[in-house]
Image 1 (cartoon, helix red, strand yellow):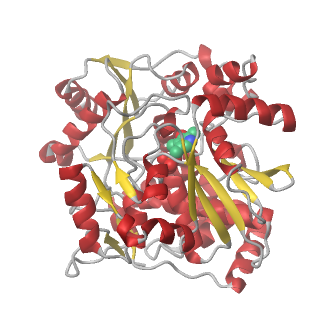
Image 2 (tube, helix red, strand yellow):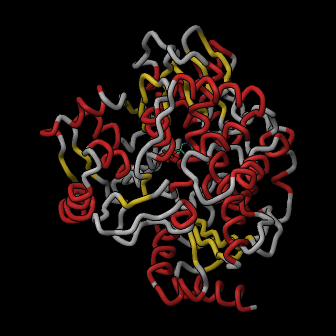
Length: 477
Ligand SMILES: *Cc1c(COP(=O)(O)O)cnc(C)c1O
């Protein structure tokens, strides 16, 4: 399998999986895509089912991911999958189990990993892949990131103890939930460096961008990223759509639908890839919170990015986005892989006008009919109501992000089973649960005492130089 940019030119060379693994954005500003989606026949689907039954989630992960990876030997990939998706890390041998909620609805549990959010599903694999490729190239990597909570802790736990990798993670001082702070700052390892900047998340992100824009510094200190546009993260997420179909249906003739809490369009884009490969998926329901950039597109064909001032702080904070960084991948497919059009829309129109309009191109109809997309949004009040209702009727405690997906799924039920993606454990967002139910969720035993551990965090002013100095001092020793 070879990869190309969504904004590429025909003469650009294609790249291999390990070449794009550490690359982030393509030099032309586009995102890397495989040259085609391998097609799974009914026979292939049944073979994957057998693999899952005999060799579990790691076996399935290896079988699916190897369709897109030519330059890591199969045995090595198998080993990496076994390490990434162990029972010890995911506290269940199934890794991504499903449970039945009512007659037509299932929940896919993606938050059993080390940091109790679905980002672990991809990040654990990324940690293994990074370590493997860096060892082969005898190079080191300093990951620099900004987080409002889930991504940062997931990245730190995935990279912890990996050879040749260090993590610098910028957080907005005092703004994460107590559980999120405890999770990150509790890590005691000289190669995991937590930084609290006196600012908000956008300030952290601006500092990361400024440091990465200094090409000399970036090269000298081997600065890398783990952001959500990374193709390997998406690929790792394709696996659980297959695992969910196997567990709920397992019959190539019986389709299933998914409702996906959506921010940067990473999770649901993986569903789109799975569907494009022939996994029997009827609908992909895009569920947003009040930050409804994507719901708006799927209703109207207009994609309008928001300013940071227009981006609301909600009670499902991991979906508080102003633009959806993976969305370009879907638009690329929607436009029949027309890189010229993608360049015009994302490279030019968005920058000059702040929006583009595909309504004249039947984008809404085609997204629905050809690609199976539907959408909806839910508010804070909807979330509280959804959490209370599902708890009362089914005895299931949902986190606020999962609640967004649950709420929107109610409006898109069909004949086929509906699978709601659970993306975090309630304990991460205890305040909202308390508001909805009047009590705080129990802390799972594996996280007991986490809030008492000593904190490891460096406080810095929100300045590019202070962060650069910290990196220099740490790396140069
Ligand atoms: C990141 C995140 C999401 C959104 O996922 P995207 O890939 O950005 O669409 C949803 N829920 C939780 C808990 C998350 O951490």
